[in-house]
Length: 201
Image 1 (cartoon, helix red, strand yellow):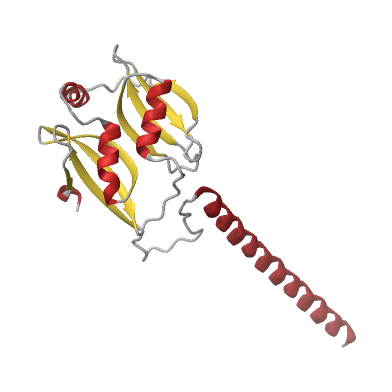
Image 2 (cartoon, rainbow, N blue to C red; image 1 turned 180 degrees about the vertical axis):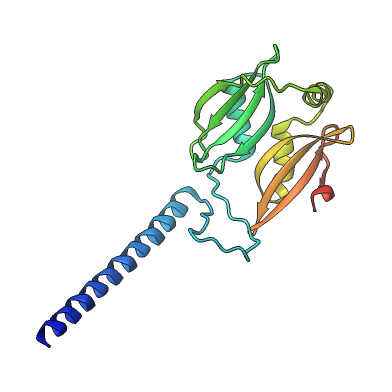
């Protein structure tokens, strides 16, 4: 009987200790997330999967899409055709720049400092007819990727900007997040006018 009481006591103690450790670990995760948010001015996604939640949280830094594009072009001169806030855990802006000779580079920019982390030539040979048409449309455009990002910033935090060929009409396609909800916009190459992208509703 005494042996059963001792085992029960030890089990209870182990469970109590495990509960304390789990609570402490959860406290540390929350503190780390809060500290990260305070340090970067960013929204941090929760560490749980809630399939009923249609709100989008994204970690952004202090550097806007327009600033990331400007930094990338200063480092690798050419024409910016897209900028995307990488969400695979690397936490960087990826800006695609096409040089005058047609070569394409992916330039990574730190979202907190705006520092260029590196540039790599894209060796994929996927320059198809659509890509060529989009680049040709840019030659006469009055709105570049940076200006499109600035125009759409009134709608929320820009997380992605790129060219989109919709039924022969090339526009800038811009994704934003505001109050946890994602928005999709088109920005005209000529006028810079921002309209909601109804095709993706």
